[in-house]
Length: 253
Ligand SMILES: Nc1ncnc2c1ncn2[C@@H]1O[C@H](COP(=O)(O)OP(=O)(O)OP(=O)(O)O)[C@@H](O)[C@H]1O
Image 1 (cartoon, rainbow, N blue to C red):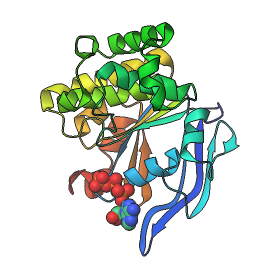
Image 2 (image 1 turned 180 degrees about the vertical axis):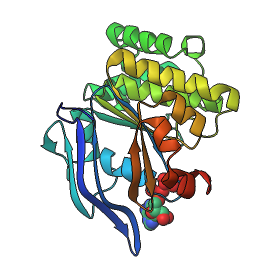
Image 3 (image 1 turned 120 degrees about the vertical axis):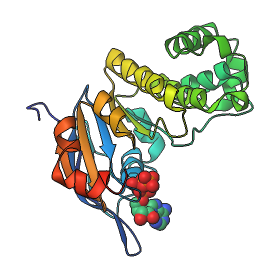
């Protein structure tokens, strides 16, 4: 789609679990500043792809190249330092910390310290100011002293996304950012995530089952089925393609 060098590229990327082929020699490129929706029925390999790129899983074979470097065997925390962040289907938050402390934990981990430093660092003015900025951007200012465990699910997803952005990634992987979120709040979550991506120049890859959201928020769509790329390209064309209509939309993505 572009003459520019890809930000992320996979070559013959393969992951098997016994007889299951969850990534079947996947070749794909992602570019800076693009927002890509990944669709596919249950078991298509969407989360496996996110896990392979983030480093949660090692590939059985094949390569992942990020900013021109082979990161296939790089540990997940080192990939964060290289500029790859992710959020989870179920947010990974520090439930007994407040919202602002959660954001500070992300800021502190970005700067190479551990979350044990969060409480002392709550007195660090620079971290405090930056955390307030993040909370403002993501509409969480009013809830900043609430414990994460008391946040409603939609806000938990937003906090998780906010913490991912606080890591200042070049590429952010969102695994089902709207799952479990009430239908009236799904667009809000997607607006917040995609606006932040556009404003910061972060590339976004998001896994999504809601086809209307995929259509509304993606620059490009990748359709997976049985660990393979069924088709990819311009959102409307992909969603209305014969392959997607047959294998994904009928089975229910
Ligand atoms: N850790 C694992 N061990 C064994 N099999 C796995 C593991 N992770 C995934 N699989 C299998 O790999 C295939 C792809 O799973 P994956 O979770 O990537 O699909 P998905 O497209 O994300 O599905 P969903 O939409 O249900 O989240 C499935 O058959 C799944 O059972």
